[in-house]
Amino acid sequence: MPSTEHIRSQVAATVDHVLPQMGIAYLVADGTREWAVTRHTRGLGFDSLKVGQRVALTVVKDPKFEIVQACELLD
Image 1 (cartoon, helix red, strand yellow):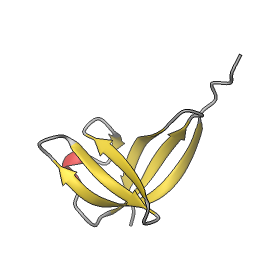
Image 2 (cartoon, rainbow, N blue to C red; image 1 turned 90 degrees about the vertical axis):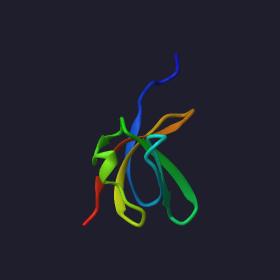
Image 3 (cartoon, rainbow, N blue to C red; image 1 turned 135 degrees about the horizontal axis):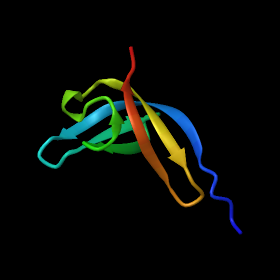
Image 4 (cartoon, helix red, strand yellow; image 1 turned 180 degrees about the horizontal axis):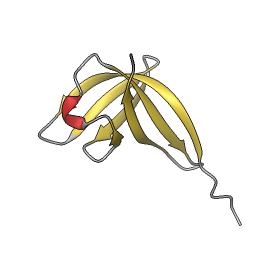
């Protein structure tokens, strides 16, 4: 039976685009990796996200996917 253990990690990212009408924001980490958060992502309120902000993402890694679990403002 495969393991269902999920690994959590922290990723520093910068808000790249905020689409309030769609309820989604796109973030970039390490200049190459893109992430997305929605109004339902825990932590920092979606409506307070602004382009250029630095955030810490809590990412859950599974063998088949990675997903942002939470988003908090850095500094």
